[in-house]
Amino acid sequence: MKRTRIFQVWIFLSLFFFTLSSFGQAVSGTLLGTVQDTTGANVANAKVTATNTATSTVYESVTNDAGNYTVPNLPPGTYSVAAWYEGETRASRSVMIPPQGGPVDLDFDLP
Image 1 (cartoon, rainbow, N blue to C red):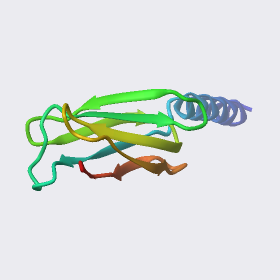
Image 2 (tube, one colour):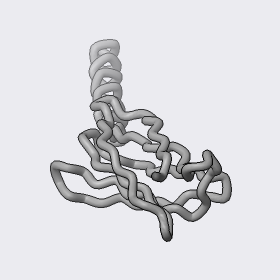
Image 3 (cartoon, rainbow, N blue to C red):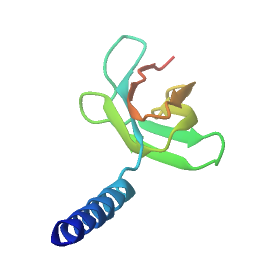
C-alpha cells in the first residue's frame, strides 16, 4: 500500500513538472546579417525592418559600427526584410523563419 502511494505521488509530480516545463518552450528565430554599400564597405547605422507578411507586425533594428544587425525573437513565418541608409536606395528581400526557429543569415548590398 505504501509503495503504491509513493508511486502515485511520483507519477503526479513527474507529470506536474513536465507540464510546467512545456509552457516555457516558445519557438522563435533570429535574423542576422551585414549591410554593405556598393564599394563593399560595411554600413553603420543602417535601418533594417522585418515585416511579418501574415500579420503585418514590424520588427526593427539598426546596424552597429561594423554594419551588423540582429532582429531577435521573430515568430516563425515569412518576412519582407528591408535595409536602407540615408542617401542610399532601399534593398529588400523575402525570408522565411522556419517552424523550428533558429538563426537565419541575411546580408544586404545597398545599390
